[in-house]
Image 1 (cartoon, helix red, strand yellow):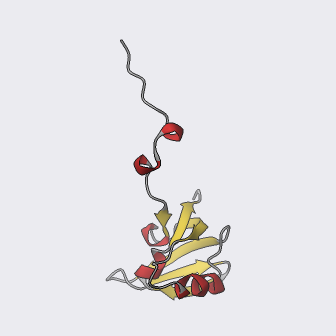
Image 2: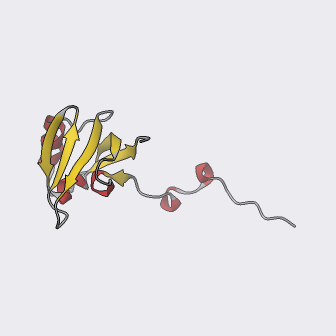
Length: 98
């Protein structure tokens, strides 16, 4: 008797890994923005991040990480910004091939 494992598409949402976030990238790694997920108590972060260019489809790159991990220097669509780690955790991404 063989056992059949369900495919990832059939797995309930609670079993799927959470979306990757910008703070999880390695230095030099590129990704594409999938969306934003800001804390409920800080709704203004959504607009601020969008104003900086963190919108779905935008290409981003982690350029540098502080020795202590905060802040991060991030490139988005040709511009550079320093983001706090908490802000970078709000940017959902999908990694791009190297």
